[in-house]
Length: 164
Image (cartoon, rainbow, N blue to C red; front, top):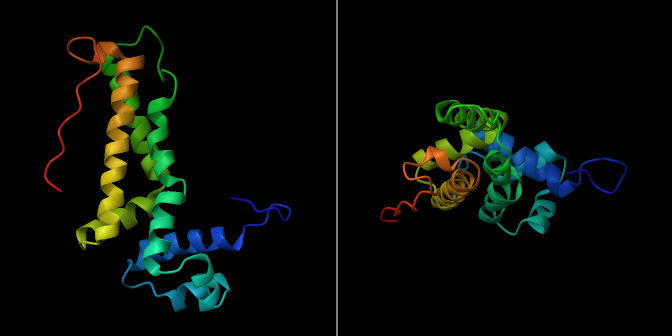
């Protein structure tokens, strides 16, 4: 996000961007606040001014960075193919749009997958929220824009989530 200083990045946004990049490369455990401070040109106290803990910083990177919203956006877009397209063509276009949006946020995806595999609880919780919001958005898109993609022409029923 540009700051109010002629388009320069705010310190908070610089911290978020650097954190995402470093954590995608080194993992959450391998990225220290001291490393982040050095990479952003700030001191450690400044990092803690913006984010009281590493956990708060991680949550901000995953939830506030806009990446979650970007991944759900394709579902709210207008029909990506023409009105005369088949349901298979519409579904193919939708899945392609999802994949392309995921590739655009590769660092985020790398971080999420790596940390979920390591059992990082905060990332798992954010990941569950992302999956749920993506499912909701897809169901809404199907019901509103492509009812023919469902067997009965209606929006699909929510799939019960498994045990947490």
